[in-house]
Image 1 (cartoon, one colour):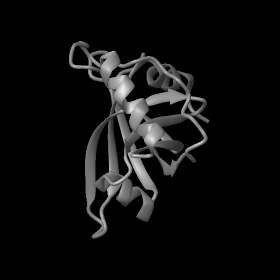
Image 2: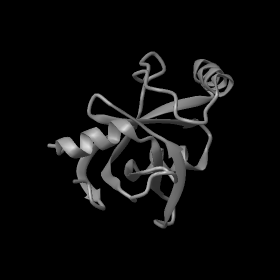
Image 3: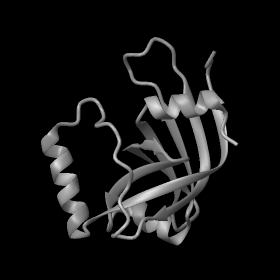
Length: 135
């Protein structure tokens, strides 16, 4: 069960750091844009990226969703779970376009998804923790 304050935070913030496990077991951290919907965190990446290969090999991941640079208090939510790739026919839920991302970038991502060059990753949480003061 995800605390309501974590749900609210995740819906409002997209700045995400994805932590994957490399083949040698070492962690790797990747800045991402994450969209929280329907009880999961959705991201997309190139199919041939190092992070996609790492998640195919070992789906255990952690995601840290944090406040933006312009917010006076640092807060965040840490999610631990398993990454799964959505089948091409299944679309990720539409979410708000993150600040600073233009419609040209959104169009390019949609084109790459349709071509199969990008994949949608869903992370369903096993564990959720709050970081900082959320009250």
